[in-house]
Amino acid sequence: MIDARLADAPIDAAAELAGFMAKLAGEGAVVSFVGIARPRTRGGARVERIFLDHHPRLTLRSIEEIATAAAARFQAGAIAAVHRFGAVRPGETIVFVAAAARHRRAAFEAADYMMDRLKTDAVFWKREDAVDGVRWIEPTDADRAERARWSE
Amino acid sequence: MIDARLADAPIDAAAELAGFMAKLAGEGAVVSFVGIARPRTRGGARVERIFLDHHPRLTLRSIEEIATAAAARFQAGAIAAVHRFGAVRPGETIVFVAAAARHRRAAFEAADYMMDRLKTDAVFWKREDAVDGVRWIEPTDADRAERARWSE
Amino acid sequence: MEIRFFGRLGERIGREIEIEPPPPGCTVGELRVLLAALYPDAAEELASMSTRACIDDTIVGEEAAVDPARAVEFFPPVSGG
Amino acid sequence: MEIRFFGRLGERIGREIEIEPPPPGCTVGELRVLLAALYPDAAEELASMSTRACIDDTIVGEEAAVDPARAVEFFPPVSGG
Picture 1 (cartoon, helix red, strand yellow):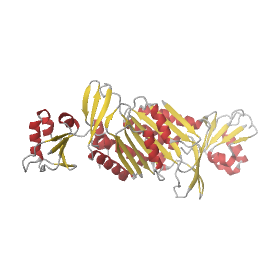
Picture 2: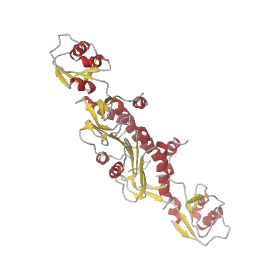
Picture 3: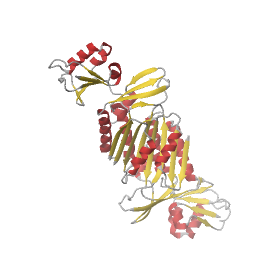
Picture 4: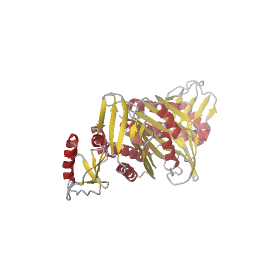
């Protein structure tokens, strides 16, 4: 069961978790990750909003590909990946992922893997609008290093 | 902010996540783990219930200690650890943990650490009542190996 | 005095029993022997060093003095959650 | 024909523009040169190989043929989510 979606309105992480758990079929372990838009830039300036430009088809396709790869690689019985696009205010949930598996190690790894890939490979173009200016963002070196952990 | 609790009734994981997120103060990453009582023993027999015997003070103290250690070790700004005791039916949530941190790696590790320690060090005595008999359970070799990953 | 048992031992013997206070100077190790005589079905577990003794919420060793005013608790190995 | 831009390029040029169909046989590489002349402020990014070209939802190389009936899209490096 793979549920990959784009959201144009704030994501309610608790409602997502409830919906995800309602569909489980005997898995003993559920790991979820919630990413929340940060109130400050790396430099410390107040962020007014994040703008996530996206592609009408390829963005969702990239999320589906990551979710499907996580399910297969970690034998996760259920996977969810929900991502905002458009304008996101600080404090709003920007991404929710969940993985359910028989054992907790697989559930942790599937969620961790999805986040590392979403942070580098998902088809978004992210702009940070802060009080000190507007910046288009690329994956950080830390993001690339996390992503590299999963290379075969 | 550390919230360690015992629960004598089913845990509502989504409500726990909602309550946890409502108390955050700017952390960008939240990882939660939900453990669900399994419907089958390792041998495949149907489980009628899990019974978690606990100590009136030391059980909660052990959970508090694990939560506090996770917060300190991973600089997690917020930690929750909620555990059932008494009789638990298959499909019911037996444990909920959550960790919030500035960055996702710390949040993942804090939740992972708490689960590995709860599965071996939490003061519970677990009995599995299955259709083929009643068994008192001890940590598995896999549980001990997971726990050992965090030894200094 | 009060003695309490948890887990498998609690199931076998009961959560709490009241026994005659042991003689002054009795140690935890001697209390195990005394209890094993009262509950031969649980003798092996009572004698096992994997069964820990606890007084006032603190794990104690075999030489710890038994005070009839302070309950002694016996814990089989914990299972974790 | 339709050309679409995303991310920083979309902000600079606009999401979608309509241009005169390029001459038959035009490649994606030649289209970049043509667009750079139209949008000198974006010339550097249009020429950069880190800006990928995409036709029919598939990333294509510099030698790919431009068909006026099929929009070409230009993607700066993705940021991830």
